[in-house]
Image 1 (cartoon, rainbow, N blue to C red):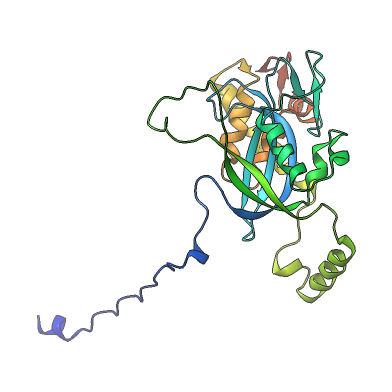
Image 2 (spheres, one colour):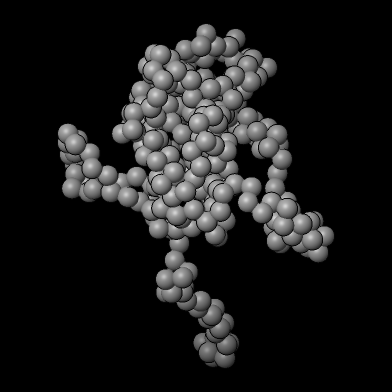
Length: 277
């Protein structure tokens, strides 16, 4: 007992308090009222995490000032009318329609862009990749939905859409200065632009996504064979949820070159279902 009494108790670790400043708060749930840059855009099929039948949508990757990415999906209408192109750069007509309904979230998003000063002629070609590099401010804007009846605990919550309310700079603005600054910074920080690792080439990103997607599809086929095509959306969403590659992965499962590559892993398809050879 005497010996125990003589031993010094270890000092308690210093407590680090978490900042209570609003400036240090992180984004949770729906992002709102924030400056962002569009770092990726792709057309895809999306089922809203299994809550709806898969339908055509635009996937936008927003990157905030802290470098965090946020994937947002804008529904384009019904699958009987529209389909994402194989390269994920636009939509093609299925039923013969020539224009999207202005009540879709897709057109509300593009309308907000034009109202904020984005040139219409840049959108007329239909290639969503032109949006990459746009720096803007976005807000959750309440939408009037006539005839919509909602039930459940959130029935009274207003319907909102994440729209552009201000454009800071268009894609490609001041690219020469930006390129020069990036080169200078890279040389000064040992090959890391602005102290961050250089971006991974798109081909490498696709290779990483393809590897993970193929593994997950094989796992799913071990339990369910044949596997419905719509299951690929759920697999991609679950595998990359909360990661910067979420939107890319969703778009990737719709691309013809990825689907063709599955044959190398013994996966066959008839267009509607996937099976192990």
